[in-house]
Length: 120
Image (tube, rainbow, N blue to C red; front, side, top):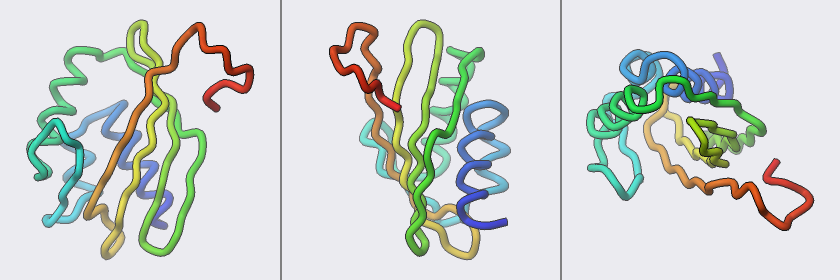
């Protein structure tokens, strides 16, 4: 499986199936992340994803674009949970075919945005 395919599978599995399964299958033991709201280790982020899944189990997640440069993959995605839509960029660094590092940024999609081009 290519890094690009693994990145998509990792995020889809986290969002739509099981964060625990996703972390076990797609991340390296030295995984770290840069989300400012949680400690930088895999368990803290995985636990937060499990809790978020319990709070909003009927969310949708769809990758819109993927960019690859060397060991880095960036994914631009659309997340819908309850009445909120979010545009999210995940940036992943791979080592030996597994995710070793992750950054993410998100923006709530306003329903009354004046931009006629939309987020995607």
